[in-house]
Each structure stands twice: as structure tokens, then as C-alpha cells.
Length: 296
Image: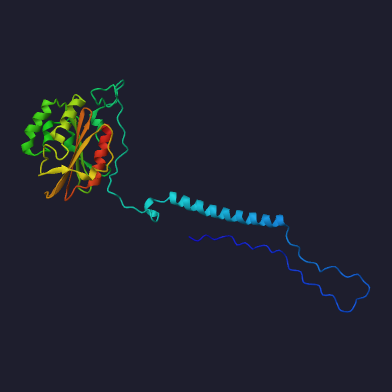
């Protein structure tokens, strides 16, 4: 951008004095006139004053132009600034998240005094809300917000359900809070929070083959294989909430499935996303991390 500079004229030091030629014949006895009048050079301090004023004016002009440019950039969207234009990375617009208040006198789930790792807040209030523009899956609301175990097990392959049901029963599953939604691109998300008596129970379930690193113990409905999701390698972890994440390997059917298990005190979280064609990595990562933060 070219900035118009104020036009200034450099002050002159005065006209040069012409040499005085004396005539060859003497003039009458009259005193010789003094040298012709001339324009005196500006005093040194006046010249310095001109320089100061000139540079001050230049600085003011540049400062005004610079301030205007900075203000313009702060008022522009990122994609309007040349060199900073970026495309969306596919994240969803979730509402502002806040943990529900704890009952009076109860500790946080990972406080030192809370040996059981208990979540005293209403588990239904710890569910991640649906993002903007999504359609909520009302069938997953259950009764008073609690889902029947059989409806949760319907996510899994028929041959896996009896064994998984027995394992949940043996470990004292109390209830399941759940929420699901479908976004405009067809991604179907389900979040399940399984509540047990203590963190020790959840640690045992999570640390066993249910959520093994390489692959989960129980296959989801419509999948042939789920393996460790390498896309999560660089995603920040949430303190006190270990996770195991999986993605359906090729070849898969009409849709791809992604899954995560979260161990959060006395809560075992299960996040499932599926989409026709391919389930995108970024919204899955975003959903898993945000749900982990609500439980942490």
C-alpha cells in the first residue's frame, strides 16, 4: 500500500553573494558603498527546528496510517486477511460447556478425599450437548433420561450382547445416561455414560480386554474389525480420563464406525460415531475430548 507523504520544501540557505568588481579608474572621493544586501542564512537553531517539525509530521502520518491498518485487521474476519485465510477443519459448533453444580458438601470426582472417584453431580447433566444444527435422537432419551441396558447393548453385534450384559451385571452397573444426535452431513453420534459404584470397578473393566489398546473386546453392530485409531496420536489428553479409541478398518460396509471408551472415576464413557461412506476424524476427536473434559 502506498501512503501519501506530506509534500515539504527544503529551506534554502540564502542566495550566494556575487563578487564585487572595483572599477579601473578611481571614483570621486566618496566612501565606497558596502556590499549589496543579501538574504542572510537561517540561524542554526531555526534549521534544526525545521528538521524536527518535518520529521514529527512524517511520524504522525505514518502512525495514523499504521493505526488505521491495525484497527482494520482487528475488525476483519481471519479469512479476509491475505495470507491468513484458512478453511474450516470440520469442527462442530458446540454450545458453551459448563459442569453442573455439585450437591452441597460433596467433593469433585478426582479430589484426594474422594477415594471412590464418585461423580456426585447428576450424570445426565454431564452428557455432552448436541452441536448447533444437529437433530437430537429422541429414542435415546430413555425413561427420565436413563436408558435400559438392553438398548445400550443393541449397539453391539448380537453374538456379543449376552456376554457383555453378564459382565455389566456382575460389576454392578447402576444406570446409563445417554444422548444422541445426527448432524447435517449424516454423522450419527451416540454418547453413553455407564455408572458404577466405584472407580476401582471402572478401572478393572477399562483395563481388561473390554478396552484393550489394539482392539475392543466386543464388536459393534455392523462392523467386522475395529483397530486402534492412530489419528489420536497428537490429540491432547484430559487429566484423570484415560481413553481407548478405535476406527473401523477397510474394507467396511455402507458406513464407517469410530468408537472410544473413557475411564472417568466411577463412570465408563462410550462414544460412537458412524457415517455413510466415511466417519470424519475431526468431529470424532472433538466429541471425545469435550466429553472427557465434562467428566474430568
